[in-house]
Image (cartoon, rainbow, N blue to C red; front, side, top):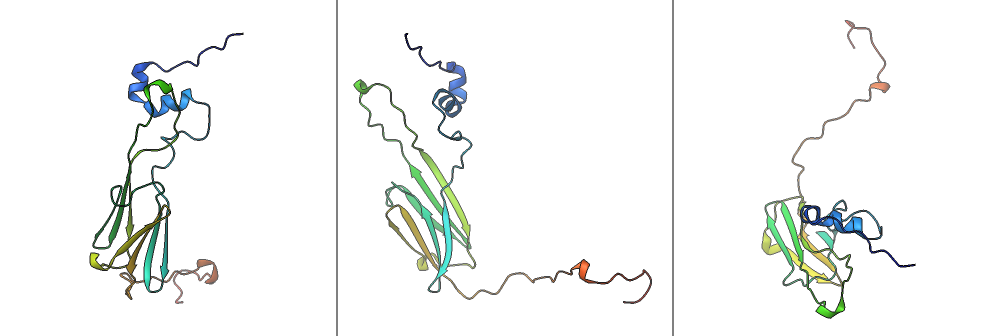
Length: 160
């Protein structure tokens, strides 16, 4: 019995929704890429009087693909994975689940920092940004919360 070719989405649909068309035409391997978060994961911690932000950015060149900026209390990490077409004309169709494009995350820092005090290093696919953790006074005032269930009810008009 002859194997029938897999149907393809009309070109007009494909031009408007390329990710959806690719997902519909491929065997189901998970949620569609346009629904999956287009962000990278980060981890924040305080270590040795430093505020440390770690970001998973595997397979990138830190000099060309990653940028770290500080503006007041906001640290921004931008990364871009460029598509490298290494296929040969004679190799035929191929399938790729790699993601390409630009991503960015902004992290609010506990206090304003000078960019000269920020360090960043990239090792084995993990970017680690270290910021001095100054002793910071809280910017707001904490408001106490009354537990209504713990206060006995009093009739209206009677002093409490």
